[in-house]
Image (cartoon, rainbow, N blue to C red):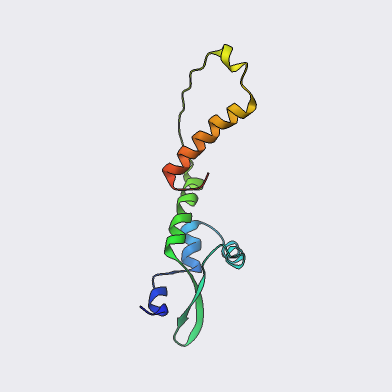
Length: 111
């Protein structure tokens, strides 16, 4: 498959922005910083257009969905209050980091 055919499935700037709910300037800034594998897709009689790989858009879409919809969860932990008085801040941090790791794994994002 030549590069032009391969790029046919890639998404335009407008499509990426619509799917992720971001502005064109944000996308262009991220692309300039090397955060995207942007390519130029040739168009007969027109200037080439910038396109973005669908797999990257899909991966970032999970994060956008989480931002838009939020995540609801409930955790019930029963701890004897006499034990909690001795908890160091690091132990509490470890508990919440563990919850974040589980949620990140569930939704396929980095914590």
